[in-house]
Image 1 (tube, one colour):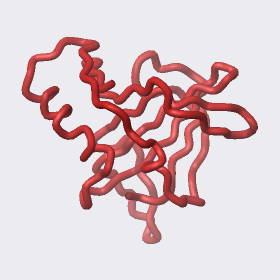
Image 2 (tube, one colour; image 1 turned 30 degrees about the vertical axis):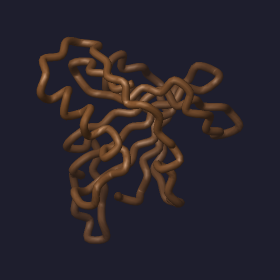
Image 3 (cartoon, helix red, strand yellow; image 1 turned 135 degrees about the vertical axis):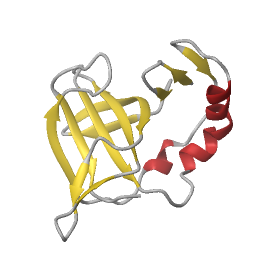
Length: 145
């Protein structure tokens, strides 16, 4: 389900499977985008880049804690997620929606998000959107898409 919260647009999942991290089951609840990104990374010349877009995949562990995986993007090839929901996103842009409006998008294979990325950054902070929950473990993939 594509949901307009007013402060962001997110794709909510009913049953997207389980990710196992540190021996705990984490269920993918939703994903949403930020443009431009909230993150900057150093390249080999130590110049900070602000990326065009980033995708947050929000997971909730069996013990109630949250883990967010962030994927950074530069403008370029079409993203398979955006391509799949492009017409629904266009509807959100053309019509007047109120907080919590929803549009069904059908099913999506979340395995398309998986890429072999060995390098990532990990730390603990809060969510960046309401309810701004504390003690969230973040993993930012080092490979830019």
